[in-house]
Structures are given as structure tokens and as C-alpha cells.
Image (cartoon, rainbow, N blue to C red):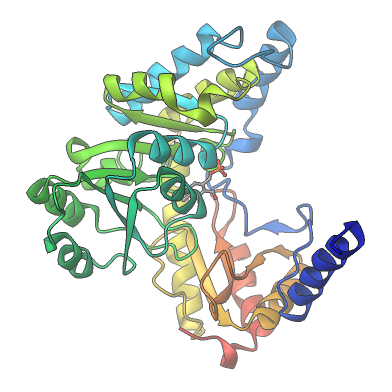
Length: 383
Ligand SMILES: Cc1ncc(COP(=O)(O)O)c(C=O)c1O
């Protein structure tokens, strides 16, 4: 008969299986020089953000006390949403407590079981889960492959509304989606384009508003999801789009409706973050420069950096245990770089996910590249 003891044994067996496959995770706080966070611009520790947030806490307290549809609403939050919408050159924006919640909210609210959604094979779990929740029919196309997508789009849609959802900068491979080609295909086929700018906002585009700005496809994008916990240095995410769409999210997006509003002080930090992005363009220029430099240093040492074109640089080992061992070794040498294993990345592609931030310098990159060469046992690095 099934009971608690059997259930406990079931879970313990799964933990043992993870251990044996080299897939058991542990929680480890930062230690060593940051080569793994998403704080690409170094804003999480920026004095202007800290001061604004601290002042706001003293004035407005800690918790927001309710959802935004009830007593949790604050003028400061709707003001920063308006500012973010201007930044993205969209009509309107809505803040969600996390990027995960934002993708769940957007996809489960706008898509339904009658729709067809074309989703890049490497899209983030929050996109995959949002699509699942929507019950739309999902068609997975090959990663960043315009021809494969076009082939799928040519098949009759039986009158279904079609959506294309993609990250603009992929979180684990560091490569960019061919957004200009996608925009063109979407225009030709009446497909609605949703772009997740989680890793691009703050860095790409002349004003730093993201890769949509950089590629000039804003007019063809229906919704942009921009996380605020990565380059923006705070937390949460903005969803931006036409006013009617944002209004509908307020009515229907369950992760927005059924969740307590963020701490009011978050709005102050977000506002400061947007100011710093406007006032200190040298931060994003530096990230791009240092990323190119590190990719070059790795290339010079015959360490392949996959398809990376950005501040996210994967060093693929394939084997889970080897990737973990390399990360442990690098941490011992004082570099905080983490191993990423399945299911976060496809089976057989366990890797070090190296990320570059504006606080680093050339000498540190040089020392890091040399350490990677020593720790990786480079012969076993693949792709
Ligand atoms: C592409 C992408 N979308 C969404 C998210 C989720 O954002 P958040 O961490 O704010 O929940 C992430 C986070 O890693 C991401 O990489």
C-alpha cells in the first residue's frame, strides 16, 4: 500500500539518480571574481540604485501589502512603467514580479488552444511553460534557423492565429536570433512576434533598450518581455506592447492578478537603473568590448566558444561530471563560473556558462582564459 514511507523512498531514489548522473544541484553563494552572474552592467551594486532604494524603503516601508489591483498599487510603479515604455518605444508597459511570471502571463493570456505557436528549440523554460499553459499547438523549430521556421510557416495554418516566440539573445548559447528575418517572415505570413529580451536589454541598441532596437524591428514586435533582474540590476520584468494589450494583461494575466505587488522601493531602484543606462553608455560599450576580447583570448587558446556573439560565452564539455569538475577547479582558482547541465541545456551539452560584466578588466580576462585552459583539460572540450 502506498504511504508516506514509499513516497519518501521515491523522492530519495530520484535524488540518488540525479547524483549518479552528475546532475544533483547544490546552492552556493557567490565566491570569487564574477564570471557567472547576469549583472552585466554592474548595476546591482551601483550607488545610485542603492541610495534610491534605501530612501524609498525609509519613506514607503517594505511590503506593498496587497496585489496591484487592490491596495498594492503605487504611483511610483506606474510612473516607471511609463518610463520603460518610452525607453522601448512601445505604447505601454506592465511590471511583473519576475521574468518567469511575465512569460507565463503573456503567453497564457494571449494564446489559446486554437492558436499555433512557433517556438525556438532553445527557448527558456519560462517560454516553454507559458506555451504549455496556453494549450496552443506548439511547433518547435531548429535553433535560430530561418529556413526551418519558413518551412513550418508555409504549411497551412487552417485559419489558426500564428505566433512566433523567441529570445533575442539566447541565455545559454550567447547567440542572437535573426530578428530582422523573423520580422519579415511574420509580416508576410500574418504571424504575431513575441520577443524575450531578458539578456539583451540594457546592453544592445544605441540607447541600450535591447536587440529589438539594435535590429530596428520594433514596429513588427507585438510584445517585448524585458527582465529587470539582469543588466538592470534589480528584479522583475517589464512587458511592453500596445496599450490595449497591456490593458488586457491587467484584466487577465493570472501571475499579475493573483500575486502581491512588488516592494514599493523596487520602483525607485528601477527608475535609477533607467537613469544610469541613459547616463552611462560606457558601461554597455565596455561589456561588448570585454566580451569580444575574451572570445578572442579563448579562440587563441583553441577553446571553442560555441556560437557566442555576446557577453554570454558557453564552453561546452558535453559530460556533466567534467563540466562540474572544471567549474569547481576554476572556483578554487578564484573565478566564480558555474556549470550548466541538463535539463537547463540539451543532453550531452553540459557546459561552463561564462558571462562577462563591465566591472572586469583586461588583465583579469587574461588570467581567467589561462585558468580555463588549465582547468578544462582542453582536449575534452567539444563544439
Ligand atoms: C530568456 C529568459 N527569459 C526569462 C527569464 C526569467 O527571468 P527571471 O529570472 O526574472 O524570472 C530568464 C532567466 O534566466 C531568461 O534567461
